[in-house]
Length: 53
Image 1 (cartoon, rainbow, N blue to C red):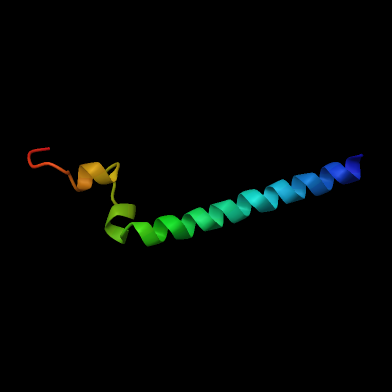
Image 2: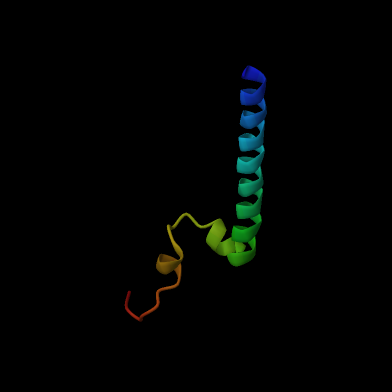
């Protein structure tokens, strides 16, 4: 029972790690460094869709 639980825990850990790596590359390709390194929150604040916002 404990051996199976150990393998399940490692599989879940590997899946979470793979998701984190995939998300890192997805976000890196979607946004520029200016957005990612900005102290302001959100793309909407950096690039408003309507004038005056």
